[in-house]
Every structure is written in structure tokens, then in C-alpha cells.
Amino acid sequence: MIVFPNAKINIGLNIVEKRPDGFHNIETIFYPIRFSDILEINPSESDFKFTNTGILIEQGNASSNLCYKAYDILNKNHLIKPVNVHLHKLIPTGAGLGGGSSDGSFTLQAINKIQNLKIEPSVLNEYAGKLGSDCPFFIINKPIFAGGTGNIFESINSNLKGFYLAIVNPGVHVNTAKAYSQSKPEKPRYSLKELIKNPVEKWKDYICNDFEPIVFKDYPQIERLKQALYDSGAVYASMSGSGSSVFGLFKEKPSLKDTFGSQLIWEEQL
Image 1 (cartoon, rainbow, N blue to C red):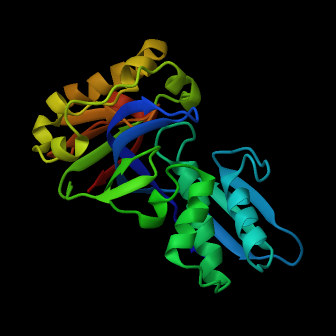
Image 2 (cartoon, helix red, strand yellow; image 1 turned 60 degrees about the vertical axis):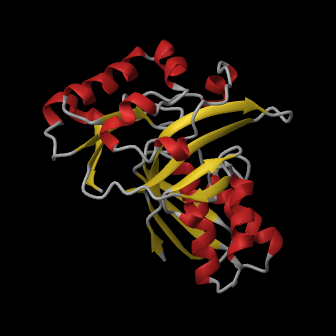
């Protein structure tokens, strides 16, 4: 079976408070996009095997490789057969696009389907939550408002149909844990659930990403990429998640290759 684990962008991200367990409550909008990895899962004649092409990642084990961890969770809770997993990685790691989380969640779904495990959606969501806070989003895979640690979802009416999306990446890996450690949580005056109702052209004035001041201080080139998107005609631009990718939304199809070169990693009409 071949599946295509897609990326996401974050429209706004507020770091609301630090929790007693050391994690942080946030609010953000997860928006799925078509940019994807390629994941092939087939039966294995022996043990679980993971291979990787494209952007190389750590082969690892159940603690470091989310495809492996997804298999391990299913193997501990169900009678499953070994599989060969091959991941052709296109979504950069440490880029704020959720590529690793998507790979893990799609592994769960693919094994569930090809081995006819008939796992209930609620249980599949629970397993995805064990992979990471944002992993259950990729089971739902539609625009949602996320609270808690990014794991409590509410449906929203956010439609960007017709807008052009461009994503640029400076080729640096942002450490999310470090960024959180430098944050100053604060409850926003207005919830993203309300701010998202404004026209996209007004988002620039109302919707922000609390990670930006932290990350821009260490990586000023990311801030320059955001400004370059605005200079190129974006009606809204933002860093996605904790970075390092920055996206821009355009009303008309932009011409960006001369400006960004290889840093332009994805374009699509939403």
C-alpha cells in the first residue's frame, strides 16, 4: 500500500500557559495542505523493517522514529503481522510542517487498513496521541482549532479555497523544546476562534505566532523570509509552528522562484 502523509500549516499560534507537567497549552489552527511524503507499507517475511530515501532521517527505534513507534503501538495492542515500511521523505524535518507526525499517523492508518484490524476511530486517535500531541490531527486531516497541548480539537469554518500558498524554508532545524523554554506564556485577549473569522487580508493585524519573536532572535534569516513574502505580495505571512518554514497566502499566483530559489519548497492553490 502506498499512502501520502501530508503536511500542515499553523495559522496563528498562541502559547497560553505552562502546565504542571512541564508541557504548554496552546491554541492554533491546523490547516492540511497537499505537500506530502510517500509512504509504502508491505507485508514482511520476517521482522519489521524501515528504509528511507529522499531526506534522510534517523533510522532509530520506537522512541525516535514515529513510523517504528506506530508499528510498535499496534504490535503491543493487536495481533499484527510484520511489515516493511519505506518512507520517501520530501517534507523537511524541524520545519514546523508536521511531516514526522503525519508519517506516524499514516502508518497507523495504513497498517489498520491492510491488515483489516478494524480499529475504532476513537482508539486510533488514542494511539496517535501516544505518538505526539499533533499526531491525532492527521487522523482527522481537516482544518481545526486545536487547544490543550495541540490535542483538543474543535471544528472551524475556515476556507482558504482560491488562495495561493507558498512555503519557504531556510534550511535550518529549529529545536521546539528550546523555543518553548524561552517562551512567556500569556492568555490572548481574543481567541483565534474569533480572529480567524476576519477576512484573510486582515489577519496580518490580528493573528500572530508567539514563537516568532523567539525564533527570529536566533535565526534572523527566517524573519527576512517572512518580510520577503510580504514584499512579494502576500496578504498574510507567518512562520508555521515553531519554524523554520514560513508560508505566505496570495490572492493571485505569485512568481517567487527568482526571489527565493531553492528555499521555495512548495506552492499550491488551496
